[in-house]
Length: 185
Image 1 (spheres, helix red, strand yellow):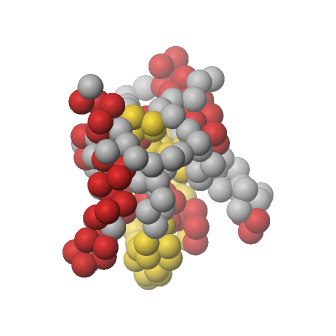
Image 2 (cartoon, rainbow, N blue to C red; image 1 turned 45 degrees about the horizontal axis):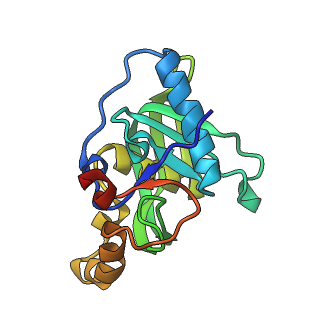
Image 3 (spheres, helix red, strand yellow; image 1 turned 90 degrees about the vertical axis):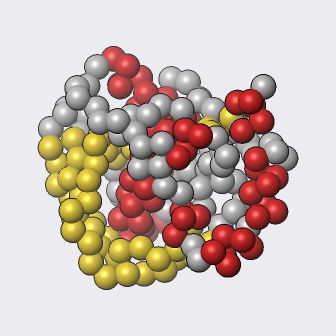
């Protein structure tokens, strides 16, 4: 397993819609394993494939480090789709691709999601709370959407200086990154 660099705000891959996976092969297995390794190295709880430069509809999630979810098993979601949403709730979110930026985001409180697992078998889950929120956040990523896009223009503008620093690669993180500066070089 390898720790992959995480693409940060300003890199074009974060704004692209990922393509469906049609089968599980060695490349997908390696991608999933590397994504888990990368997410854990960065102390994250969810990671989408385009955050590591791969335009595949693959998400990994592990919220077991959060006390009330310690019995929740890590999840791999391939080609996930949300087909039911209920209620709303607001909680602060952050993102490994947008280090040091956090803000309140409104999302559905309960969702039903359908996806393929690592055996490429269809799974349907009804979830709420943190797990549902992380799934929605990561599905946004594979659709080229960032949590910032859920903020009002005024709230987005409040983060302009932080976002400029990320674009200029002037942030400190404990994990490898690819920034818009790195990509241009």
